[in-house]
Amino acid sequence: MKRLRLMSQVVFLLVVIVSGLWLFSHAQAQHQRSTFTPSVPRVWDDEAIATLELPLADPVGSPKHIASDYYYRIPVRPIYKSYPVYAPGHEPPNYMEWLKQQAPEVLWDESAHKPNLSSSEDWIAAGRIVFNTPIYFTTHRIASMNDVRDLKWYQATGVPVAKDGVVPFVRYVIRKQGEVDLGDFACGFCHTRVMPNGSVLEGAQGNFPFEKSKAWYFGRRLANPDDARKAEADLRHLDHSLYAAPWQKPDPSMPIDNMTTDQLIAAHAAMPAEVTARHRSSLFYPLQIPDLIGVKDRRYLDHTGLQKHRSIADLMRYAALNQGADDLASYDGFVPADFHYSTKRPEPDDPIAVGGRYSDEQLYALAMYLYALEPPPNPNKFDALANRGKKIFESEGCGTCHTPPLYTNNKLTPAEGFRVPPEARKQFDIAPFSVGTDPNMTLKTRRGTGYYKVPSLKGVWYRSMFGHSGWCASLEDWFDPKRQQDDYEPTGFKPYGAESYSVKGHPFGLDLSEEDRRALIAFLKTL
Image 1 (cartoon, rainbow, N blue to C red):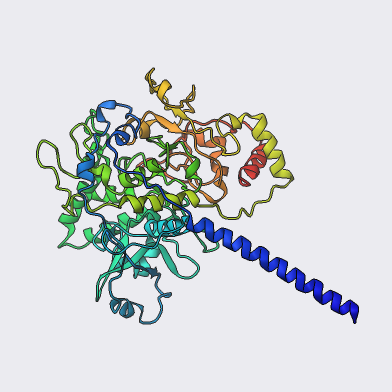
Image 2 (cartoon, rainbow, N blue to C red):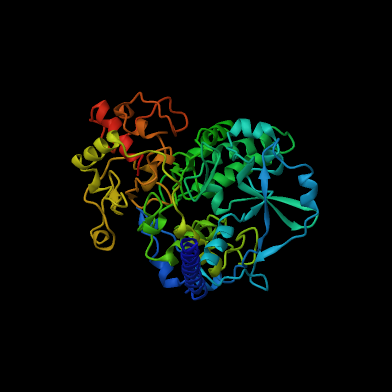
């Protein structure tokens, strides 16, 4: 009996101690949550914007961005509550009718609607809302309400669907009761990945088939006799505004004028999901969609190292630019928003020309969310084969450029044929050699700086389409020595009209034995 009484006393004491420790840690956590005081930077600081981007390879075309007084007169977009889009066969019963009954709900604007942000966790959660908030609705030129509800669209484009039947790249938005809009072009539109098991990874290299969907959209319009002429004009106008670089002679986008409409459609449709001809790039030299997980540790942003990343404020500026602000810049007189300083300049409140902006607080929340992103659990174990690959990685000197623990040295490498200005070596962290990959993207586009940045190898196990234009679908393809042969057929992006394409450059690892390449790849997939 005494022993039982003693045991019960000990158990009671342990319960008291554990409870006290939990209460203490909970109180500490609550204290940490309640004492977070954000310091929201001013996004459009004229001096910071002027030094934000590297000069273009031909500095004549380097953009002159709008001034801060113009930027801050652009209205802030209200963030509405949005709802998931389901693939055919997965939508709940009467879902569309239910959506039409929902009243518009503003989650965040510049008036009375603002989330309660009293902790870093609150800011990160709010940033996720910004990340998934569409900025264009229904009438945009990538997908339509009819598309996302049409099984043929999924079959033709290969749009991946999550295991719960949700299409995570787009959202339904209610801005007026009784009307349902399809919203797209959130950050998550390009940076959300449906994994092979159907889970959704936000912030990763996206796998929405952007260019195939664009081709489907315009192809459907061109098939309509009443819309065909306008559709063709819209497509050519859009492509020129996206890719023109008229200060170069000849303008690298001019071949578009010599292509038939069917050829233009086919050029877009030829790009795999993880590759896109985004604005300021090229229909002929597109870009692999980057992975944003780990962006906090990157010193340069974009494959061409276009923008410096000096602080969280610079990531905020990058988001602002890529959500429409750089379309308002002048590239040696060319303004992508189809206005020229010498003719007509769009007014800040012109919704067609400008389209709204994020507030500084919204951009700060977004950047905090991106900084907080974590990679998914890696299923690849560090076994004997991977250990052998690690030794090969070290003996081959891969760490010179892909330096652990980030597996990048965060430097820029000059493109073949680009002469580095002497002053640039003092201003930027530039490696003393080129890796010899295709120079066209960085020499002939509005994102072209003359450099490519050294990418991080972390997370390559869940990514695809390697090389800055995504020529090789897998690491096995990237390390295949046959890729440098003239008769090679890329497994990823292949330039339109080419029967074969030699993927030049980055020869490292190509001379290894088959067994050593297999070991090296096994190691890389553990990162």
